[in-house]
Structures are given as structure tokens and as C-alpha cells.
Image (cartoon, rainbow, N blue to C red; front, side, top):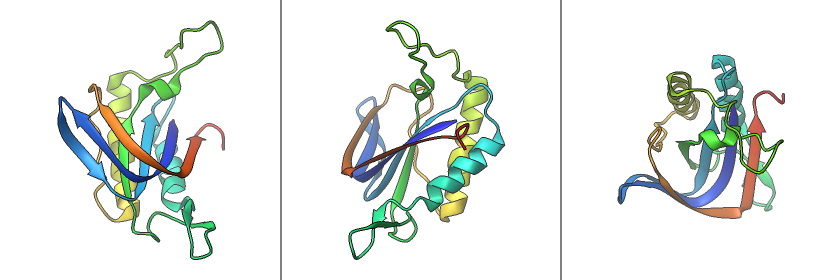
Length: 149
């Protein structure tokens, strides 16, 4: 399982010209689910995400987590994070889990992040053609793979 975290001043997901979700200051999280991923991967990544100190303190040092700054989190499924580009120029997605596996894990991940933060976490729509807009703050972008512990 992989997440790409972007610290944002705002982010939104639009589907068919309708805004589905919108957040202010916080994190946009793109989530890719692999064939071998389990609830153990969810626990690891949700815990890392909720404790990740990427927000500035009074001294301008990235020392605060999402709860300490009262930030929001938006989670969007993105199977292309599982792409392999080792051979040729066309990415391979054979490591991405099929929908029957990835959708429930995506939903459990989002639910777990909400539990750790103590609030509901807005999302995109699994499998939809989404337009994701964001203003990256910093910019700060961090990639975490649960298999690289």
C-alpha cells in the first residue's frame, strides 16, 4: 500500500462537474492498494499519516502533526500509484489490487484515519473519473510505502 501526501492550503474532488469533497488547510492523501496489502498495511500507514509532523510550529520548523494544527484530510484512491516503470515506457499496473480487494481496503483505510483523527474524513469516489484540485503548501509532498518499513 502506498500513500502520497501533499500538505495543502486547500483541495477538492470534482466528479461530473459537481464538487464531491473539499478541505481547507491539511493533507491531500492519494492511496494506491497492491495485491498483497492487508489490514496490517492500513494500520501502519494510517498511524504514520496521523502522527506525521509536517506542519510548521511557531519557529517555522515542521514539527506539528495534523491534529495539532486542526487540519483536515482528504483521501482519494489512485491505483496508478502502484505503477511499475521498470520496463519500457508504458507503466504496468499488474501490482495494483483488483477492485474487489482494493475498494474495501481503501474504505477501511479512510475509516481508520477518521478514527485516529476523531472526525470523518472526506474522500473521492472509488473508480470514478475525478478532477482533483489542490494548492500544495510549501510545497510539501511525501511518499510512504507500507512495504518499506
